[in-house]
Image (cartoon, rainbow, N blue to C red):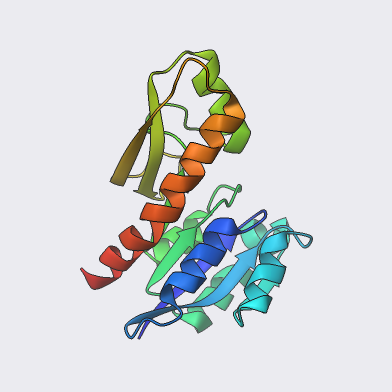
Length: 188
C-alpha cells in the first residue's frame, strides 16, 4: 500500500479531497496530515476523516530534524503540498528525492514565487487581464515554484471575472485533477 503524507497550511479542502479520493483505494492512502498552523481547519478535516494530523513550528521544520524524523518514521511514497505556504527545507528534499509535489493556482512559470499564493495570484491574473489561467502540479525543489512541471490544466478568464470568480474556477480544477495526478504518480 502506497503512503501519502499531506502538508497544508489552511482550510484543507484539497487535503480533504485527496483523503476521500484514496479512502477506498486498494493501492494508496493518506496516512498523515502535517501543518505549520496549529489553528488550521485542515486539522479538523483530517481528524474527522480518521487521518492522523499534527502541527509543527518553524524550528521543528527548518532548524531541527524533528519533521524530517517524523517523515522517516512514516516512510511516505509521496509528500503532497496542498496549500502549504512555507519553503520546503533541503534536508527533507534530499531524503525524499522526487517524492515531494505541490499544486500551484496558476500556470507556472507565471505568477509563481514567494508571496504568490491564493488570492494574491488570482488578483494578479485579473489585474493583468490574462485570457486564461489554471493549475500547475510540480515537483518541489529548493526554490519556490521552480520544480519540474508534472501537469497543467487551464481555464478561461473572462473580462467580467473578479479574483473571486477566478478562485472558484481554480478550485474546480484542483478538485478534479489533483487526486488523479497523485494517483497516476503513485502508479508509475
